[in-house]
Image 1: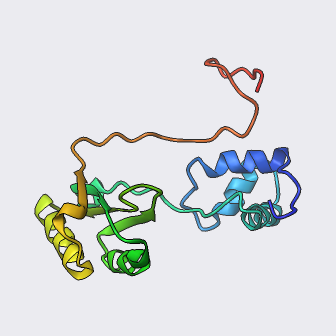
Image 2: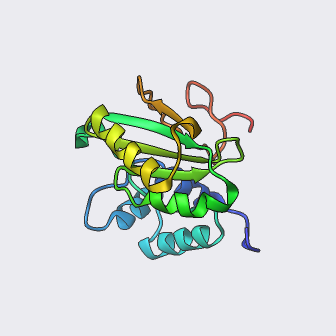
Length: 170
């Protein structure tokens, strides 16, 4: 944590609150600070400290792609030689339909997602990416979304609670 002190109880409450809805108001930090019983300036200092320590990497919205007209998606993995990873990743990232592009320790080391209005548009974008990157079809895993499951993943930083909301060991 870059020599920073461990998070205290107020930091833990802040981390929990940041996983909930951030209010769409002119001063969301003030609203969150009010819920936590602290001053807005104190909250902002804590957010910066937690970010500088690497505990918070970023704060961003979670969007519902279907309500934005994106009805098709796929996860793609490519076999790409090590020396072409950066170049290929740059080509992939140049397409606005690509939302994630990441490297994995895997025989197919480059993975990315494409979202679009239709399966046909997905095929077009993927074909353009493969053509520009010079990747043959046999070096591609295309894993289209068949059924979408959304898990609301949250990390509990405070004391553990049982099903009735009571604090327990942890």
